[in-house]
Image (cartoon, rainbow, N blue to C red):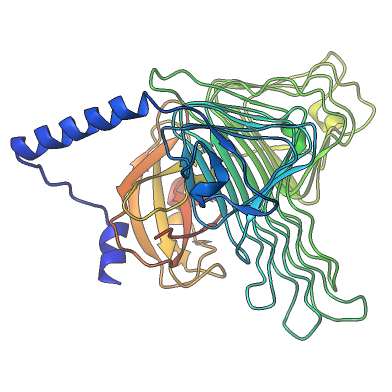
Length: 464
C-alpha cells in the first residue's frame, strides 16, 4: 500500500552517474540497430491460437515492439496480456477475431511507431464476463505515433448474463482508443453490451460499456482528428428490471471535428464532443436525431471555438438529450434557424469537462488529461481505492459532491493550457499489484465555487 501511495503522490527521479547513462545509451543503440534488421511477423497459428506462443508466427517468435505484424483474414487469435508491436494490420475480407483468452480479460494493444489497421469483418473484443467475474473485459488500442484505421468492430467485452439472485447483469467492458488520427467511417467503436437478467427477474440489466476516442499531438505539436464519430457509441444496457444504463460516448479531438456523413445516430447515456479550444466542431448537414443522449449531450469547442450547425433546417432537433444539452463556443446557424430549433431540450451555455488517461501500467509513465477547461484554470485530480459512488462534497467548490467513494485523496493539480487541456504526469513504480483505482477531476469556478464543475469518473486496474 505504501508503494501505491508513493505512486499516487508523484515520483522523484534520481540522476544516474555518467557511466551508467553511457552504458544505457549504448545498449539502446544496439537494440535499435537490431530492430532495423527485423522482418515483418505474420500469424500462422491455428483457430483460437495463442498470440504469445512463438510457434504460431512466421518467422518464429512472439512479436515485439520492433515488429510490423500482420494477421491474415480468417484468423482467430487470443491474447492473455498486453501486447506491444511496431504496427499491426488485421486483414479484412473474411471473419477475423482478436479476443482475450481470459474471463473479463483486457485486450490491450499498443503500436509504438506505426498504424493499427482493422479491416472489414474484423472484430477486436475484450473477454466476456463469467459468473465469478461478470464484468466484460476492456478493449484498449493505442497508436502512439500513428493512426488507427478501423473498417471493422472494436468493442468491449459482453457483461455476463446472470440467471438471478446476484443483483444484476454484468457491466459491459469499456473501450478506449487513442492515436494521432482515428478514422472509423467504415467501422464501429462500441462499448460492451451489459449482461441481461431473466425476463421474470427483478434485478437490473448490466450497464453498457463506455467508449472514449481521443486524438493526441505528434512530436512536432501537430494535431489530428477523429473521423466517423457517429460510429462511436456507448454499449447498450442489458435487459432487466430496469434495463441497464447505456454507456457514454466521448470523442476528444485536439483538432477540428470535421463533418460526418454517417446515417445512423450517435448514442450514449452521455455524449461528449470536444475539440481543443479555438477549433471547429462541424455539425453541418446532419439529420434530426443525429446525436441522442439518454442524459447529457456536451458539444464543447472552448470559449474561442466554433460549433457549426449550418445546413440544418428547422425540421427537428439534431441534438437530443434526456436531461440537458451543454454547448461552449460560437454557434453558427442558417438564417431563420435558432439553436432552440435544433436542440431538445434547449441548449445552455456551460463548461463541462471530461477526464482521460491511458491504462495504468506498473513501471511506466502515466499522464492524466482534463478536457474542456478554460485556459489558465487549475484542474484538481483526485482518486479513491474504495470505488465509484456518493463522494464527499467540497465546500470550496460550492458544495459540489464527487462521485468516488471516501476516502478520497488528491493526486495533484495542473493548469489548463491555451487549448483547454490540463496535463498531470506521474511515473508508476514497478511491482504494484493489480488494484482498481478510481479517478475524477474538479475545477473550482465562480464566486464561492458556485459554478464549479466535475468530470466523469474513470476506473482503471493497474497492469502489473
